[in-house]
Length: 150
Length: 286
Image (tube, each protein chain N blue to C red):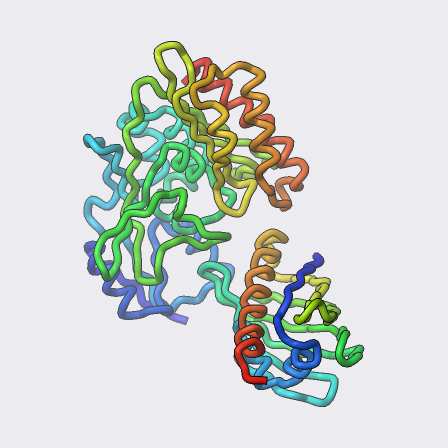
């Protein structure tokens, strides 16, 4: 399934780009991040907790960047799994930043393939969860970027 | 893995157990959804707080302020209860069409509502009837209208240390009629593709005094459409008006796509089934 979303942040495109590669600060913005480890300049290992109602899934996986064009575009892939529910996720993503007025629009497209017992919840639940996580991510980015003294 | 199984004898004790164990504890009532999730290893709570030994938790009784249903009442008992059947036959019907008899023998109304599975029958009818959830927590009791109880997929307004103890269905005027329609698109399965509950009150001339229609299963949380309900007020429910209200429902909602049907299909079915429930309440079949 495909997930597409975008949001606007009142900060310059350079500031937003800079934060995307500032792993400790970025980790604080991604909801549910437990840990991030830099493997090399293209690969990161991470652990993410996603909650849907009573179900708490812990995904461990590797993010591989394929394309990095500062300060406007990144793409790559994610592979991970949640051992407890015997579920795995494979996704490719691309994200773009564009200056709109005084702010920056961040847009992304994720092609997601979820397998295993979690997949039974189906598209609508995954889409709604993605939307909520995106909204939380955008709010956290704003908190990081819009209130700092530049 | 062993699970600590607690069996409190009343709701305050159950709430205290939840407060003590926090995130580690899960409530279990009939066990329909909890057991499935445990079996599939989607949840692994170290502590289960069973409500099964709470005396009187399954009571079904009528009083001046409404029909009181204990959270532990089984759906099977609700569908067969003469109190429920006399109170509102459409409500008994909404319980009778859930899953199959084995599920209904085990499932409780509190569990059905707390699990907040969108593909469920009772919520749409209960919301159309204006029912409220009775909630017990560390700060005492509170009431939440069921229309505000469902916040999203598998998510309710219950706080982590709160328990649903029952529901209250307010009295229905003798001039009112109710109807529930379930539409299943997959014959081998009990879950609805669409759930429509409607309650309409009529004046002596047969004009509609008030109308509530709640749509469930086709949307993330049950929905009413105020603009469509308002179209009926003070009017006779002619076939034309019914078609217009059904159209308003179909257009105002944003249905979801899953194995039971696409958004387009569900929109068409909303139009059809809102029309059917309205004709039924107008013609007084129930």
